[in-house]
Length: 533
View 1 (tube, helix red, strand yellow):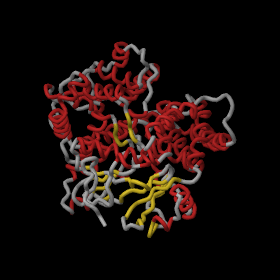
View 2: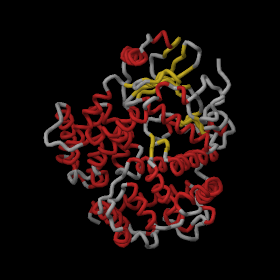
View 3: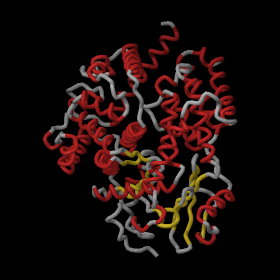
């Protein structure tokens, strides 16, 4: 029987409560702060550079990746730049499939990093999103019974043998508790924790060898990517931390009164390191635009709610969902968004939260040096970097050019120069910044799907005004910039999009058309170069 939702003051949950969340009385939460610290401290040991190969696993990884790179070197490399990069990305994707869950997980993270990782890798690794075979049901039973200390039938009156979804780390099954509540059960793959640690050691040994040797690694920086991946995945191996992430984000949504987003309730008792039982939420697939509109749902409001909640969590609390994609979001019939899967969550300590807030506010007032200083404090640039020198060399204090008006060779040269300069300064992508950028890119794609005709400049103004009115006093106290006294710098926003100053409105449909034009001109230029014209 559903009980009254008396826990809505502690979290943004559904109105039909299968149980009540009382954080202070949940046993599995005890000692989790220490668990999280120990987990983070494990990363340097897992990713340290070793002089000798770390175990037998590295041999298989080395052979598999070696064959992929070798095939590219002998065949694809000679076929021109585009064919070379596409061929290498395809061979790496196939190698990742053969190497199993850890590499598939890495590929899935890369696949949602459009704009962060090379396009060829992103495109190929999208194929890894649904390429994970499910564990046999008996293996699932063993994990559930071992972790809960009970027979499956003692806990569940029904447990679907076929999973709803099978991912690289875990799979999810629909079930019904003996007390009558419908739930979903996330179950970790039996050997994945051991395999992840072996694979991280192997990756750390192999990654430095790839630097400068293959074309798709220049921007990705394999050693830094492995470190970032390790920081991300080790916390995913403890489902108690994921359940705590759920409670934290639900609390933040409640504190900011963002009731347009809801979090499934984790069970107060049935959460362990490898098993997570949670409330089952249903709704429209995030890509089912027609279904939502037929149900009278304002898809533009869905986009706005998600954007505001995401920014408030990051800017004000330093905690945000770190893996936004369409599979982790459902829109309920009342228009509220059910946010799922909290294995990857961005967490900023207070110093980095303030740096992050300075980065965003620096963008709003077009203060380049403030933004660079914030990136330095976030760890994206070395602590001793000369900010004025970076500004001069990159020319980022100069007016932004419209890329659609630049010759292809000019645009390529500019990208190469900026990339070379950043790498020369020791630039890297900290985990939280990568997760934030990745989420922002998803928000952009969500607008293209749900509200392609929404005026982006008007939406940005609306969101900025909301943040100023609701949180201006706190932001001013945190970073000394009062957004209530600042007008939204639309000129700077237009420049960041490569738009001329006379543009007063632009939709995502328009912006996508501009991007297509740039891609088409670049492709034509590359083909022309290969043909010698």
